[in-house]
Image (cartoon, rainbow, N blue to C red; front, side, top):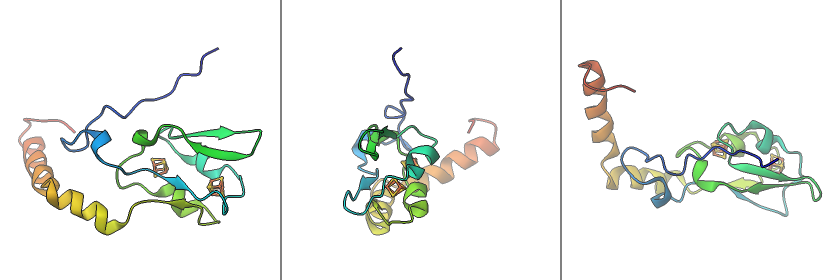
Length: 115
Ligand code: SF4
Ligand code: SF4
């Protein structure tokens, strides 16, 4: 039976097409011990797992939630990398995301929009 996967890649991030933001995990192969914790813990279906070679695969990178780095935090081998915080903050600044967020909060408060 064909496995069904979630697809968040078409959901924009605060108005920016998700695929325009290169935020997703990269596995450092030499450090990974194949424990599978990243694969088991991601709620966005980013990973597949290669059971034969005991390695996680970043199969659906744009499913990753922009700014999330949970899998990297829980990897005991430091085998998962993300772009830097400065890089992400730059994207936020460049695209005026803070202003967009404030506007959205106001709209929700006034009942003109939903979360
Ligand atoms: S949590 Fe780290 S060590 Fe474990 S499979 Fe994922 S990348 Fe490899
Ligand atoms: S950062 Fe979060 S959403 Fe992205 S792959 Fe890791 S656990 Fe999944």
